[in-house]
Length: 90
Image 1 (cartoon, helix red, strand yellow):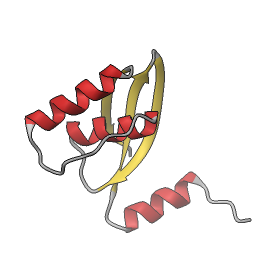
Image 2 (cartoon, rainbow, N blue to C red):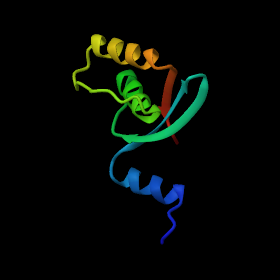
Image 3 (cartoon, rainbow, N blue to C red):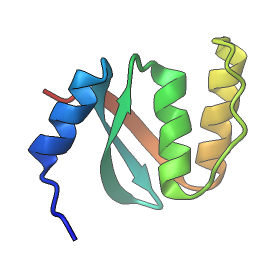
Image 4 (spheres, helix red, strand yellow):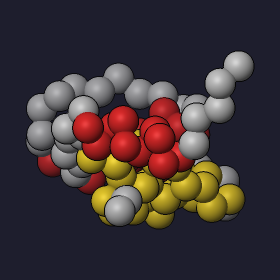
């Protein structure tokens, strides 16, 4: 079984043209963080990925409406997801 380092994975992702984002959130009061590769990330995407990472998945409409963000936030908060924030991981 081969071992891949974080540096190898980061290099592979960057070579694919994607960026790496670090997403922080609280789930039932516990701070969690993960890395998410994507070409771009906005607030709706961050909430969507945080919902999936927390295990409370959602259906995601690819439109970029304010209503979608409001629905994602309401869904997440209903199950204990709060304080979603993100930034590009360098």
